Amino acid sequence: MAANGVSSGGQAVCESEARSEAERLLADPRLHVSDRHRAFLRYIVDAVFEGRGDAVKAYSIAIDVFNRPPSFDPSSDPIVRIEATRLRETLAKYYEQLGNEPGARLDIPRGRYVPVFVEREQPPCQGDDVSDVEEEVVPAAEDATASLRSTVSRKPYAALALAGLAAIALAGGYAVFRAAMPVPLDTQKPLVSLSLNAAQKDTVAGEAVMEDLAVSLARFGTVRLKSDVGAARPGVDPAEQTTYDVRMRYGEDATSVSLWWQVSEASTGEAVWTDQDRRQTGTGTRDGAIRALVYGVSRRIAGPVGVVNTMELRRNLPASTTGNICVLRGEFAVEQRHLAPLKAARPCLEATIAADPADADAMATLARVFMWTGRTTGDDSYFGRGLDLANRAATVSPASTRAALAQLATQYQVGQNDASIAAGRRGVALNPENAELLAKLSMALFLSGHWEEGVRLAQEATDLVGQTIRDANFVMILDAYRQGHYAEAVFLARQVPAADTPTTVLKLAAIARLGDRPVTEQEIAAARQQHPDLDRTVAAMFSGARYDSSLKAALRTGILEAGLKSPELASNGSM
Image 1 (cartoon, helix red, strand yellow):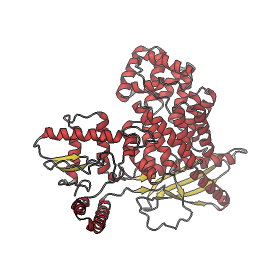
Image 2: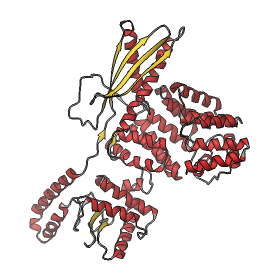
Image 3: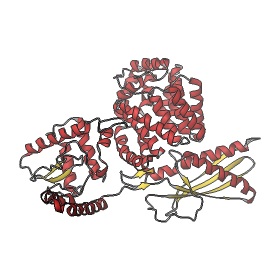
Image 4: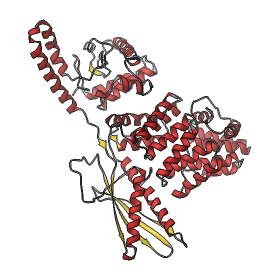
């Protein structure tokens, strides 16, 4: 099978040979290309093998490879055509140097940006004789019509008939080509059905609890509620649409209210999680206990790290899968905050938005992916792109907590602190059960100098889930450090399981302020082994002036005493 369905006159090679040649080429030190050209080459090669060849256009390359803004216009900015020409010339010289070495060859035909793989002894693929026109990917049927075009030029009277024949050949070949291409799965948000049992004396209260739980689940925006348990949508691929059944049993006594709940996969009936939540009641606090019970269960089912999202992320689906799974993977990449998963999350998010320009979840997630890509690479051009997407998401879906979170993060990153805090407040109002969003709002407030409110909200977020939340805990550590309670800051930092790099930096600064140099050096040595990005994170905490200057000065003192380096890097905070 041809690697991409296009031979352009050369003998196409099988897909395994094409993949082998692509990896060999990209790893060969004899290929003297810039990092930008190597990224260009990697991008178009990955697109072919992931079945996205027809989506490779000058616009997508400019955005993804050359970091152009979303307003990029290929007709006024020829960067992609210029760099493609240079890359073709470099590849031609490279293969000339290989001489008679056997194997495959990667060509980029003129007029296109999709590579083809042919036998190395074949002449280079020329493509159409254009250098400034981007064309659609066409199938191997193009070769069958080449002679038709030359015949038309010699016999004008046959032009009309032959043109029709050529169109039929092209259409048929293209249909075969597209049919052979893997079609990415387009996953939907999972359906959740609710059912409840209760003792007769608790029936009315139990029904009210289930109604409140349905509202609470919907606020997270991660699931869709199934109104009829017995109904099924015909013709839907099970890989694209999953359903979870949530069975509950409500009970109450003189001192408490409780909810036993179990989440099962509807397709198999397998129970994936079973638990029971209980809240104590006191005089006049029954309604508050029920509300806390409902909020707690809904977060554990549909929250960012809830049971349903966790099960969805565990599904073994291709990396090219679009839709809901892609959004969840993007959010997970943001929480990891490493460049490789961030880059891996982008193609499917962009494909999701291309298929549905009104998908606010995908836009909001891609906005945060862009922001963290900029933070990890030091390229601030990503920040504007992220902000634009976040604002678009909020415009398309004003009630989306994901859009509010994206605005909170991106607006803060570009120094729009007041707007960032306003977006966070709007998100919390939309979903008061979202403790992670509340924690991020507490961060924005605290770093902007609103100490008391930031700490209060961080504590509220922690109380909501009954355990440590990274951003809330970071605020608590910062507050202890700011007040000179260095031993307390160290203690709080040590309580964080698998602490991230910013938390580790705070711990090191606090240890240094305690004045025990041997312990400081030992801790720094251990931190460098666990966190290779230690110095980059230090730089991120000192570049820009988007958070309170007194806090920055206090941090700088501790970090300098620790002896950590602080290279310049355009970034900010730990959001």
